[in-house]
Length: 383
Image (cartoon, rainbow, N blue to C red; front, side, top):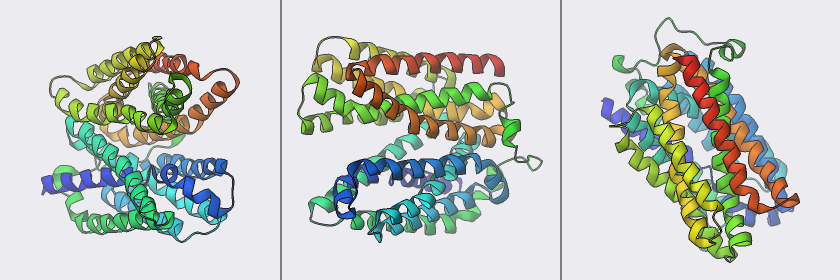
């Protein structure tokens, strides 16, 4: 029964990734019929991000109230409802309205599932589960692209992914008894939700929040601007740059598959430090003046280095902060991550516009150095 639950958690991680790239993939076909400017995608993205941050901060209270299984089922159902809402929207304000449950559904399930796995499964499963998220994140845009290239509408793309989420919701509802297995209790009976003011006073909490902020800022900045970097600085065409930018995601997805095996030999802290070293090598390679011969391996290495950091930081949270406080800590880590995702890639966009796109590598290096510093301080405080 435990193995069946693990299969369901793997499916849930694929589900987490499915909606993530839909807006990016569908927006070129959406903004014209909606009668808005192309930049309006940022408004929807910010609403989703705000909802995700809010639900991440509420995850500790929700998970203690309902349990990880019910939170996961409820969150996936909420996301499914939002996706169906997107599919029946023909006005921009309707998309903004449905973006609220879209974001709220993402944060709690992310924190609840990650904490559940951190408490009850080995580090290799955490790495492989995040690899499954990458598969889901790649599949969603692919489905949207197939529908659009076949002459279908973007609304059909959202409808299709929404139906997949509804199917997963049904599977999760039927699986609820598995989450109550005595060997997989979510928390100790005496544990209680921690107020946010108390959580941020825990030694090392601020440091791990900044670490996560910097990690997601680095990951999302590299993901968002790698295509522009290859097109405008290296000299690829727009189509070539769009395809080659996927090297970053390829490095991260393959890296997480490999990380699962490496965690059998290395602990979480060593895996995180290995990731730091590989990212540094990738950034240095990006800085070399050899055009595509340095840019492409650089992006691949940065993605490969990112691979172990997110899952290993999450998995090590119960060890550093205690199982009874891990849900609260993972919740604020997720919130910090989404803040970094929302703020730092647009900030680099302003830097690129007013200074130079060539500052991408130094920008990533600054984030990496800050991440290394705060992670080291967190380890010292939690020893």
